[in-house]
Image (cartoon, rainbow, N blue to C red; front, side, top):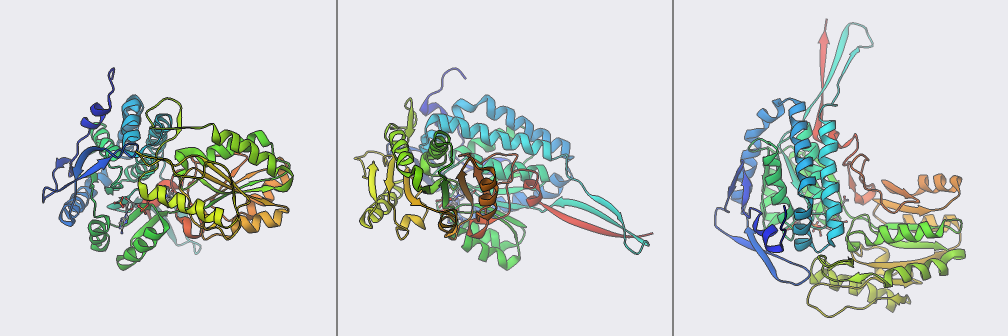
Length: 487
Ligand code: NAP
């Protein structure tokens, strides 16, 4: 595309519900506005689904399930592969669309489109690698046949912070496994998902396999679908609080679940770390997605010998970041998603300062328009500060000092979450010892980013259940069937 304009990319997206392969208005004709978080201005309106629309979407997914399960895996894989290629070819306009609805800088949005595309490439390859087994029963008289089948129609719910990648991470394996889906993107960022539905259709996805419902009434629309019983799985990415509620709802009809929930990642820097690498990693782990990531470093624990120098260097880097609209050149600190997010970050910083933390840079709200909060570094953050327990979800780096490895580990593990932990050290024995003792599903060892479609992403404790990506990602959408054979 030669001419890419803001209004052009928004106009190009269908704003209706996508049900059974057709774009349809909400039955009651309702719509809601999508806003640009950098200006507060309305970008467009999209259909506001009611429970009746949700039911129609589930009906379509249920009707399409047997045919899709019977489609040869290679064909399903080829649809995904074509979607991967289209995503890469349209990266620029999709990135602009994402920046407009979510706020992240364009460079990051481009990265997310490529990341989402990689899930389609990876699961195109996985679609044809589902295996089974044939074994002799221990008594020698029988045989065991083991095969895998799609779980069935699946409900997918995604958050606003990675509007396309979180969809790709679920839709990719669902299609590879042969599951039909109803997906509900976050109300604040529906456009990327609507664009993705168009791309998957172009790639040849049969009608009814992907149904997209946008709504302002997430609970009202999704709960009846969860309790309906015809969908056999829920895959959710979002906050731990909502995840808990959904788990309760899933219990009624015993749905399979995958839960990618909140995080509170510790970032440990030992005296023996390569400090340049640690500061680079800290910038990535903190500032990716303006700090609005489940994997964001939420607490920095730095050993006394390098504490002051690490804080000085991190402050220098954070203070130099350009804040502004994500479409402007060189912006790193885009707007937060809404004013409630700014208020929360602001309250957490104030609470830490009231308890004795020192502000090295940033630390106070800036005038609007837009939901901006500056890159902030705090030191001497005490254990009882609220941000030690709560996700900041913004560009704030709280640093605390430690002396011993045990002390660092105790602080790092003192949380209900267990998604990811980061650790910087050049001592290989310590690296492995601490990695094993950190209570997290993922460890960034001398590395500030862990996400990779070919690796198993997910958390322990209250950060979730199950894994997305890697060779286990497709298993979340498969049931194992055992056939007892008498000879
Ligand atoms: P959220 O409030 O839990 O919302 C996530 C999704 O759930 C949205 O689509 C939301 O719809 C929907 N939802 C909200 N209440 C619901 C209900 N009662 N029933 C059904 N659906 C409901 O989370 P968020 O603020 O969008 O996202 C940030 C959170 O996601 C953070 O905690 C972050 O750590 C987590 N996250 C985790 C991962 C991971 O892989 N572990 C990745 C990214 C984000 P509406 O938009 O309409 O409210």
